[in-house]
Image (tube, rainbow, N blue to C red; front, side, top):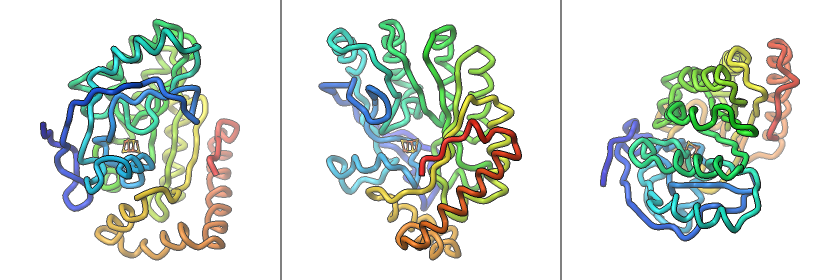
Length: 288
Ligand code: SF4
């Protein structure tokens, strides 16, 4: 099955090939929490900086990240079996895809698994860049030990459409935070990975942190761009096409240790200053 994505010509696939598959496990151990649940392999959001594209080392080699999604159609059945055998622990949804990516509106698997986990008393941490999570706020309302996070990297829609073509605009993500908070659900934000010269500017970060404050997120992360499998070729291609003047600077930040160290110090100092100005420095967590 082929569906249209929010892809932008030349920077991401314009269609996403959907394939229904069966999985053997779903509730897997994770470094981000006790467990992670991923109902999809691949992600229709197709972010250029995505660390999850390492998955293409093992399958879908040669396919563009963002151009395929395998839907684990038996996810709920498998989770129902696993949940009975596992001790209760925090579950992160999702670690190598966005659980509320476009395919979720058709299949609803992350929502079904979320309902199951909550019914069995598993604490849940969600991270998404999709407003589709609003559909499932009813499930989370009134539940202890659940939290919703949104990833926001830029307020500039032109940039966002290039680097996160299938994701939601930042204003929609902030609306998710505000609505969740209004309904008593704990929220947080993830600001990153920041693209050197594009989304790590003082203007952009000042705007984002101001919105985070307004939305009332309990805490927020800041992350710089890191080299992971397949990230540099994707970033380089995008910069060559759309921002060639940023290419050399980005290359230095990623590949030259002294430049990277100096960049990290500059970024740290800048985000601390901005957060202090907004009065939210105590809510900030640096990932570097
Ligand atoms: S939403 Fe997350 S998992 Fe999906 S492509 Fe973007 S960074 Fe990767």
